[in-house]
Amino acid sequence: MKSISNKLTSLLLAASAWAGTAAFTVAHAVNDLPGGPAVNQLNLHPPATKIAEELHWLHWFMLILCAVIFVAVFSVMFYSIWKHRKSVGHKAANFHESVTVEIVWTIVPFIIVILMALPATKMVVAMKDTSNADLTIKATGYQWKWGYDYLKGEGEGIGFLSTLDASHRAMSESGKPPATDNYLLKVDNPLVVPVGKKVRIITTANDVIHAFMVPAFGIKQDAIPGFVRDTWFRAEKTGDFYGQCAELCGKEHAYMPIHVKVLSAEDYSKWVDGEKKKLAAKADDPNKVWTLDDLAKRGEKVYAANCAACHQANGKGAGPIKPLDGAAVVLDEDKSKQIAVLLNGQNNGTMPSWKQLSDTEIAAVITYTKNNWSNKTGQLVQPAEVKTARK
Image (cartoon, rainbow, N blue to C red; front, side, top):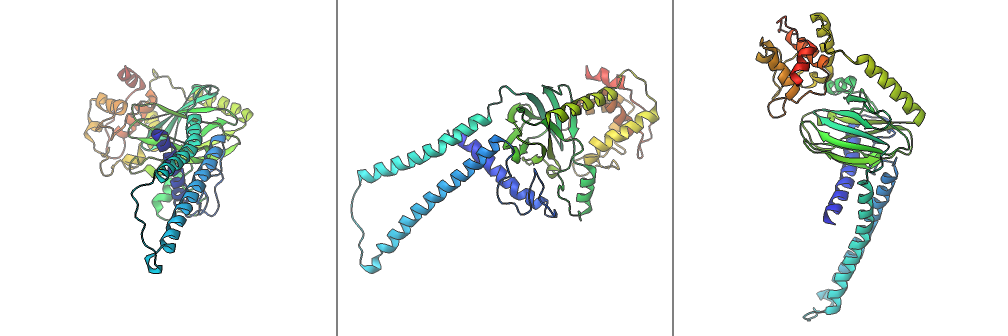
């Protein structure tokens, strides 16, 4: 019962805290963001799922119950202090014990706890029932982005990374961001789901602990390296809904938004068809032999999307992030060393593994780093070499 109560309290507090911090984060916004935070927001988000609606009800039930108890207890206490004060002649009663009082102050709190525990338990059980899902998606937390893989249901096989939109990063780094309703919540690839379908979200992480939270859906689930957790939601209406990583995960924790786009069944099917066509078009033959120029151009795009956030566009790195410009492993003639770093990571996860990238993408970004900035090695890595190193 204690663990259930802690779980529910954690979710409610996190949602309330996110409501406040999100309002602060978009302090420059001029309008409320539908599906996201509102200007000067104090309450929980408007619910978009049945679970979120019940959480709202439970939140107010608990708040009112606690307020009634607070008023009742302190009213009796202050009345007794005032009415029976020594200055008007009252003397303290002298008695040893009262069985009646002891029974009352045992039974009444017990009844109150039961009144709070029953709806809370029902809620937590419903929140953890991920069975019979129409769609299963794995959400993987990375420093600092989300990876989505559609594992089961319509869209099975689709996978992509979702990163903060480059224009919003630039606004943040400028120090003077313009008034923007979805400031630091816009991503390049939102998570897309159909309305009215039960969506199971499996969470895990690649490096440190993250947390997948979308307040409008009433979901918050930690994403822990080496562990698989799950949660679920069923959106009751179409639209755009926003969340953030809710676990402090490093220096760019604030740059790890979640954008869920809920579409009608027809539009979702169209989106799935479009994504599968894109995947087919992007499917690279790992045995294709590339020229250095073509591979470097491809690698520049991969670097900008996945590496520049830490190593910077100039390759100089920052703080504990090692520079790539002039790095020994980049300049080394033994290309297998850098391939191993990309595939396996290093320094206890400071440099994460990038196995989720394709053989061609890894080969391209290595080739780009070996021939950019002051690194003029003339070396290139073919996708086939990366494919061999994976085995």
